Amino acid sequence: MHGTPGLWRDERGSAVVEFTLVGTLLTLLTVAVIQIGIAVHIRNIVHDAAVQAAYEAALADVTPDEIEVVVREVVSSSAGSDLVGAVHASRSDALGVPTIEVRVTAVLPLIVFLGVPDGLEVVGRAPMESLVVG
Image 1 (cartoon, rainbow, N blue to C red):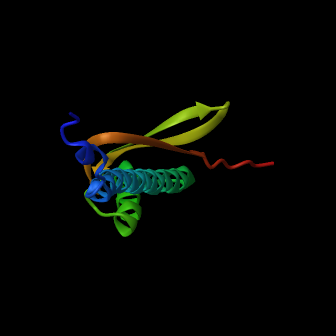
Image 2 (image 1 turned 45 degrees about the vertical axis):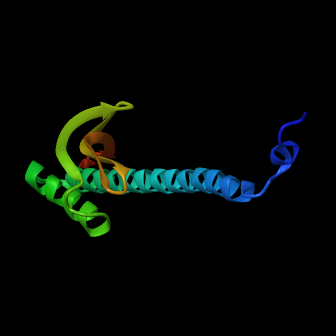
């Protein structure tokens, strides 16, 4: 007595199950790759804004408020106005050269553009302007 010998060999409906499992896995993988791409894109935009603000701050007579305005304008023109958290500018001696350092915190996007506030921090540096007479 074999019970139901044909039932164990019946493969009807297995394609639907395989498609569901593989389709779900591929969809999740695709969404994860797209989300990583969005996070890297936002990081590059914020870093570009920090570098641009550092170069403008290194010129002369620029206030910290003007530096923050530059960062917010660059980021809002590319990605949205709610991404930038705090902007801090300071002077430093990177590699023995007087520089301006602009540190920007922003939202780290986890689900499309929703994410961790201040989860992303970038630094932009620029050499300070100097006048050499002689």
